[in-house]
Length: 428
Image (cartoon, rainbow, N blue to C red; front, side, top):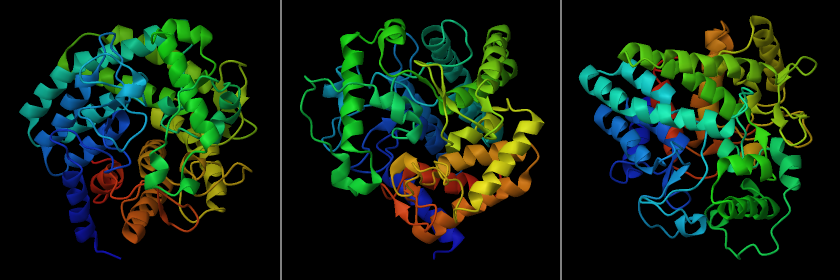
């Protein structure tokens, strides 16, 4: 096991090795482009030792922003044959090419954190000012095109948008997607880099790509897809991250004197009610919702604890979440498994069906700390750091054995180690 100082140096080395000239790839081969929420966590890691480079991560990310405000989940800055589906499959006619869906919108929160902790305040404020209207346009896109009825819950149209691609929370909703009989043939590239037992099943991939074809046939018309897309869910990962991001966008608006407070406050009022409507008293958890049926998706996932990060939960619900997670902790060695370890769908090695993810741990620990449960926050932090110290900076980890899983030399795991290694909670 390496020393903490040598691990810190290794984490910095990984970010530098994965730097592609202003944007950071998650890991070579498996993920050779720039991903939206990866970029946020990675920028926070860069912030610990190279502030100018940290801000550049967002400058490059927003080169992919669409004219309607949408920020896509992948920006294809340069050709790379090791990943599928690449820009030719998405068919988005813009430069640089991008995907056509989004991801958990972490950017506003991370811009706030970076502004608060910056040594170079002049640079940080200038960057925050330049990014603010772009982030505002992105959040307006969510409201206008994914919650036009003002329900307070965002409609998610693809499992990839949630960040938790193959979560058991999407099993039934995804199973209703009929595989397109004319689906163009394809060859997966991910299983050439990672053991297939750690990746989504082929049947899921067929449906993921079918949904991509649905998007293309609709001309990426969001309001039409709200009516016609066969996959429509409310995702706690999206809703809670967006609620927190809107809180932080409001803070930025006030700090920078930009005057959008009433609009953002309206969004927060709606999403507060929307997220809290996902609470299940009997289970002591928040559940995602299938928006085609209106039914709760009754499987516990790590995102079930994110209303603490959002700040929407009451003190009583926060205490129930604490007891639920303490119960989960009896079944695993390392917190937080991405699926309830009591669930028959729990698979401790398969992507989002059980493994521990450092980035989600970071958000949930912050929530517990802010609700007055520092012991649980520190348990999550220590488990995360221990996983890195024992098995390195893997994409995700086995919650029972601590084995590193998925891609290696992974940027966002290294970034979390840098941001979290010296102090409990975010380095603010």
